[in-house]
Length: 307
Ligand code: SF4
Image 1 (cartoon, helix red, strand yellow):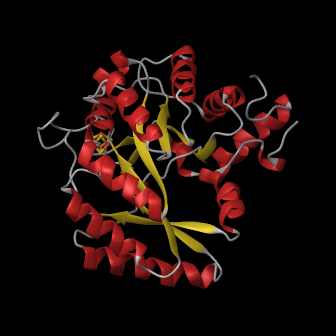
Image 2 (cartoon, rainbow, N blue to C red):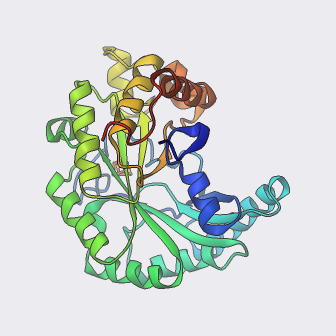
């Protein structure tokens, strides 16, 4: 049986609507923090595809006052379109637990203090979840709706070393076990189409992630961006990229094997237009989502149907 209606998968939008009773919209916030894979604590240069975490569209604001004002501005705009909506403040760019707990608490509270903000989503790395940060997240979990996002991208450690992830699968496992022990939901990001990865590698990454029981998964295609090491490498020496049909087929292969209760937070990425080198087809999110829907319909399958 397919419980997801026409979507064929457990999309986070409907899940949140059921949970909160209203449409929930994300506010994209950039707290102006750095990343240990850029400042030399774990690595330099960052992950070779990274243009700044996944927050290419986030509003940058490095103080609680600026966060409050950025959240307010977005709410004002969004509420014209969706007057009844609630909001999740999404700290998206770079590593959003990479600062002292008091500073983080002030930034997060500034977002939570805005009317209509009902929860937080915090993107970070597994190696930035020390005991003091976990304690803060556990406190936050007590008083608001919360999830943490982790950019694993692949479980193949050779691929991870090639793109300079600078943390191990063991660190990811330790972090997700600690979050789960505290009842803090987490969402893991995977990228499909990393150089050298086969279909089996990508299915293995999804299986690895799902066995640890995340709240959610985000899938997106590899974006090659200007001013990133991988993008520049591609311009010098192009390597094979997934076509839209291959991406859609892989996404459906993965979703068919995921437990139905895992929420799906994204099946396509937001690439800032002028920075994107390839793939061209990634510019049109609607066509990517349509292509995935068509592939599900063609197969007559849905999330979890191959479990
Ligand atoms: S860990 Fe995230 S923010 Fe840091 S370099 Fe990698 S993708 Fe970018």
